[in-house]
Amino acid sequence: MSLVAVARERRSVELASMPEEVTRHRLALASRVYLPACSIVAIAAALVAIGAASRWGGADFAGSMQSLRVIVVGPLTLAIVAAFLVVERLRPAQRRPIFARGYRHDFLYTLLNATLVVPLVTALTLSFSEVVRRSLPWLIIGRVDVVPRWCVIALIFIAMDGCNWLAHLANHRVRVLWRFHELHHSQEDMSVLTVFRTHPLIHVSYLGALIPGIVLVANGAMPTLLLVIYAAVVAFAHSNTNLGFGPLGRILVSPNFHRIHHRVDAAQDVNLGFALTIWDQLAHRAVFPTEASIRADTGLAGRPLVVEQGTDRPRHLAVFAAQLVAPFRPMDNDRELPSIRGEKSQRHRPRQRSHTGRSDPGASCSGSLREGAVER
Ligand SMILES: [Zn+2]
Ligand SMILES: [Zn+2]
Image 1 (cartoon, rainbow, N blue to C red):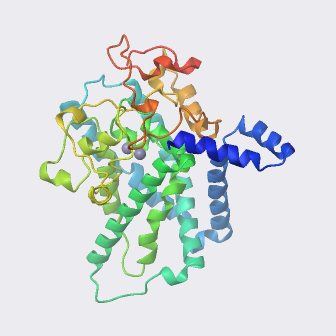
Image 2 (cartoon, helix red, strand yellow):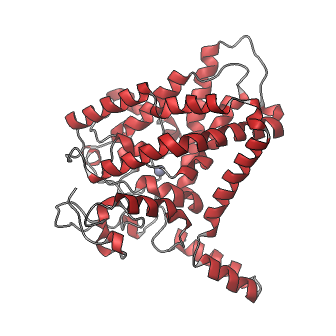
């Protein structure tokens, strides 16, 4: 049974078991807001409130925020991103103008991350850590002197990457999470800046990746430099480059490997890895690059989410605001589902070619922001 059929059946069972008055109110509200998305806001708000009430578990909020800012937009990170932008010009997967519309738009997300997302993620991180420490103290392993520190750090790194893989899989399989994650997949002009194209609230789903660090905190902590390198690997995987890393590409996530995860014409719940491909290989979800996949188009077929390439002239701020609000808008079950392996949905239909020469998945979409094809 397809996901759409399952969703419809579940919904009709739910409605049948409710009193009429409640059903009417719920339908009225659900016609205006996608209620499950509000649960993510509630979780984030509850965590921030708990963290603030506990004074962030005694942690230095300003210092933690500064450390995170260094990882996200510190001098080393910016230098690495600048180097990647040069590599994108030298070895592009797809040739594009230097200021392609998608690049300009993802720059807005970069600014959002540098300003508002850093304090939000700092608050979520400190609060989540405090909640785990208080409610599950038995999880934390005391000092073990026989294990070298570098070994502990390697273990945290691998386990953190595995947790990120699991959370990413959940983003593709749990509908409410997908509504926040689809923004990341909507990019049709992939670049190194696409790593920042995420909804601020999606970070709630990745908090579990902190657990390995919390469990082993008495034995070692990930150095900031290693976290910068991790962020750089993830950013580079999004770059518009045709690089595959040779034999290392069997273990490390390369741009060619991650591009398959963003392909518009295939299921996207494959190649979910952040830095290591081992999780995809273990779960039989690894698809290694071919000549055809290296230059494949990316994005979401049918453009269920408004995108900057869908407007006849640049309307970055309007599109940006619409994308951030989108997870809360009522859902169209027939169109707004993630593309899943083995599922036949309209997401897999080939895109129509537009007069720009590029495929135009928005040709059948309604809405003023989706009309027309664009110059880049
Ligand atoms: Zn994804
Ligand atoms: Zn991605």
